[in-house]
Image 1 (tube, chains in turn yellow, cyan):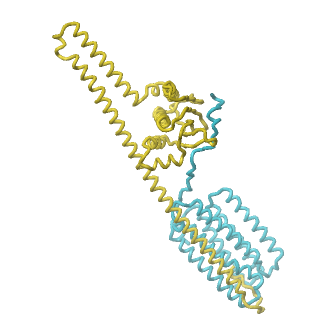
Image 2 (cartoon, each protein chain N blue to C red):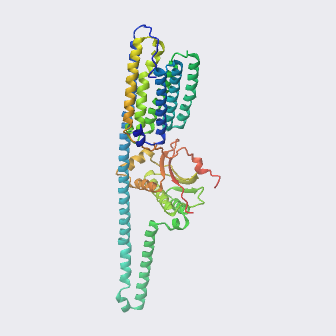
Image 3 (cartoon, each protein chain N blue to C red):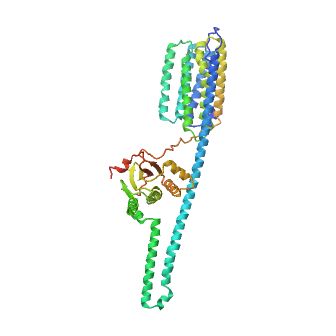
Length: 277
Length: 219
């Protein structure tokens, strides 16, 4: 195209200023577009960096919350052991002190019986502490049984109507996954019971592709996704932060929403299926 | 170009190297047919082939960098369309006159392609600054070149007999050619990097109906 000039040299009218304006305009337009692309992209990159920074901040909050939660849990166990199991065993020891041999037989039997009762109580207490750490139903029979058991206990208390239905749980998840899901469900149910004033809670489970879904319905006062995100970024809502950190471990997702009819709230939990087989 | 090739050996850039080799060869042919063996008909045919080769290579180079499959398919139509225009223009235009329509069509298609290229860059490429990539400078060079010459080519159809226009045509065309080549030289300093494609930050599939949880054929 460098050599496109015509050979015919018949002079004619002068050059149209429109051509120069057009060329100049096109050049300005091209430079403008390129400039805009650079400007816009820089803006987006800056925004992404900001988003990344916020995400890191959120991670830090979650980590702190998780550490705090762990400490609280340890304190609770320590308090249970110190305040309940400790005095019980100390009392049992008093009954079985050295003077026991010097006592009368009836008194000895009474002391041994009392000590036995106290030791039984201590055993029960320790079992309860242990169960709160790892529910035996979950360990032995799986998530379905543990969840159904939990919901039956809630329903049995008479405070609200709770039910759980597992549609397709023929193959169990990995034990650690089951525990995490159970804790999330427990936390959700606790929150609903504490804050929502709900009349019913219903949990359903199903599979789709390589994903497992859990959905909790309740008719109380709930939260939607934006509120969940907001609480997650704030210093409040330790329980929700625990849910978020557990979901992160599971590589799952959670979605809080209100039904279009505004009659009940839905919480959907999506987790990848990693079976124990 | 040797230095350029030594530092940058990505698959996509090979198209660009082949384009440079083909273009240089055809340019050599143009010089030969213009000044050494003046055969106007053959010279003009050579120009037409050069335009066709230029558009084909640039088209494939930029299409290879597109991320949307539908856009790739759409822009591939340009080549057969351009071949049709070239053939038609060659048949209807006098063999001793340059067919400006073909050059206008090339500029138009290239501007369209590059406009979409920048649009896609805005949409998807948000990982690293765009001006650090080779393709951005190559695209920028051709965008300025084709945009600058677009009006010139439109006018060249009606004013090719004007010697003043011819002079100004050469000045403007050469200026944009120099700018293009300078920007292409800048591209030499940047290393080709494979950046990840944008991530989908979509939430959970909320389209799952409640019935999914209540009706299961397996249960």
